[in-house]
Every structure is written in structure tokens, then in C-alpha cells.
Image 1: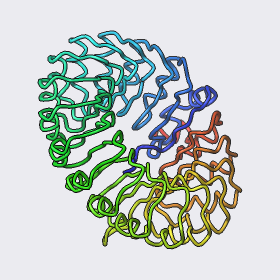
Image 2: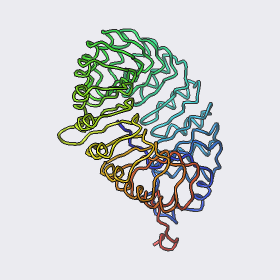
Image 3: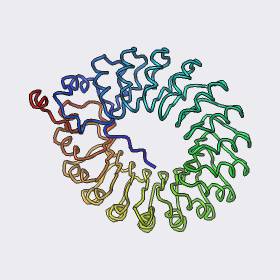
Length: 429
């Protein structure tokens, strides 16, 4: 259930952008350029810096900016994924320009005009407007053209708005605290629906929502009946019930039929429940604070016959070497609660395809070398600094999370993003 978009997300200081400004497309080979960068600590940006960021291949996050110029909007519109959640207002011209972005996040806006709504409906893939607290029926109809839409600021919707929004592919309405049976029936037409503001559902509403094909998020529910668990087991792919603090064996049996399941509110699990839940492909159990060797062995069955599964256990403060070896048979593993690991654990965990160890604040060079063998991605968001040698070691990874860094040198950024400097003469041949 991980979203694979992150190559390098770091809250870096301006030293990075000043350094990046010394490079040009002629001087660098961009076949392996940086695909994603997060600079949410910046509160202002120059046109020169904006132009550099406009060449990032996939995504840019600049949530610290409270205003941009039209020319900056134009430069940033070249990226596929853009987050500008700090903006509290935008002009019509900026709206027109930014609508060219494939995925656009403008959660700081508290209102938009009908004209801007029309423009934003042309965003190709996804649009987040969580700052809006009200919307007209007309605006809802216009925005229904967007494939992925987030409107978490709305606290209520009309049946007419529900009808319009039901044509959206992926819809977030986490501000709603209640829905009618009719709205539940209407909204069940979306592929993915997030209603985390609901604290209860009727059996009829649960049954209606269970026909959603791809994903259903109901993290506000703190309890469900066995009958509701049975209904929800019909959700085909992803089910999020992170508000539950306990489940019955019967509920575990039902929920174990879902492909991907999130139960991060559970603080304990019986061996029998672990066995039942291990039938899913991806399982989130970040609320667990302890795990027996037997349960670790059982939970490695997560996945399918064709591929190893993903397991999220970020509530564990420590694991044994034996557990690390057992869990290494998974495809993906989150262990963000660990604050230290042994060399032996690093060796075992390096066999994973994707690994998250964001609770670690330091690693030895030897451990970093070992962990760099992870096949696809590594998240080390607890690190606050790295050396040039460590950056070179980590450059072998395709996806890397280093959100704890507050400063990075040009050399380190070049190493991590796999830039290869070439002379102007060589590049022009």
C-alpha cells in the first residue's frame, strides 16, 4: 500500500538550490536525474531557483511558499506532480497555468471562483483542495471530471453533489461526519473512497460501501460488528480500519479475505489472528509494540504464491536478530520504531526489496554499505546529516527517503541524483 513516488525528499536549505544553479542541461547528463524533491522548508524562492526545479522529472513539493509569481507558476507547471499547499490565494492566470500539471495540491485555498473551478477541472490526474469548506452543486459537477479528487474540508454534501462526485475515480471526503443511506449508495460507484471522518455506519451503509472495487478508508470507526466485518470483506483490494483497537476472531476471519488491509490501531494480536490475517497481500499493523518469534514467522506468509508481501510494523521498538532474519523473506517492510540495529540485522534486512527504518538517527558506514544492497528503496528519514562517502554509498538506490536532512551539499545532491558532469564540448557532440 506504499505510494512509490519518492526518490529524494529532503527539507534542505537554500545551499542546495544555489549549488544546483551552477549546473545547466548542457553541463549535466539528465538520463538519471533527480525525479523528486521536497523543499517544504523554503518560504521564498527566486526565479533562477524555480527554473531549476521546473526541470525535476516528476515531483516538487514547495508547501512553505505563501505566494508565487505568474512566471514562477509557468516554470513549475512543467513538472508532473506539484504541491503548493502554502498558497492561500491564486490569480486566474496562475490557475490556468497550474492546471497543466498532472497532479496538483492546493490545500491552502479556502475558496475558488467558478472560473477557477472550470480551469482546475482540466488537471489531468489528481487535485487536492482540502481547504475548501463549502462548494456549490455546480462546482461539484465541474470537478467531477478530475480522476483523483480530495475535498477533505467539506463537512457535508448534498445528494446532488454526491451524485456528481460519484463519477470521480478516487475521492477523499474525510471531513464528512455522517452520510445518508442514499449517499452511501451513490458514493459506492467510485473506485477508491476515503471517509475517515465517519465514526459509525449502519449495516445498510456498510453493505453499500462494500461494493467499492479498489479501496475504502474508514479509519474513524472504533468498532464494527461481525456482520459489518463480513460485509467489508467484499471490498476487493484495499481496506483501512485503523481506528479499531481490537477485533474478534470472527472479524479477523472476514477481514483476512481482503487483498490489502490496514489495522494500525491494534495493539496486540493472538497467534490465531496473525495466522488468519497473514492471508492478505499487504498488512499494516503499526500499533503492535511487541511480536513473538512465532508471530513473526506467521506474518511472513503475507503475500501470495507469486510474490512476497508487504508488512508494516513501525510500532516495534526493537527486534531480535532471529526476527530480522525471518522478516527478510518479505518484499517490503516498515520498522520505523527501531532506534538502533545490529550489523547482523542490517545484513538480514538488506535482502528486502523496500525497507523503511526512519527511526534510526545514526548508522555506521558499514551498516549503510550493507543496507544500500536493498533492491529498490530505502527510507532513512531519521538521519539529520550524511557524509559525501555515505551519499556515494546510497547512490546505488533507485528510491531514497532522507526527510531528516536540513542541509545538503551540491556534491552530495549530485551523487544521490546520479548526475554525471560533462564538459560543454562533450555534450554538444
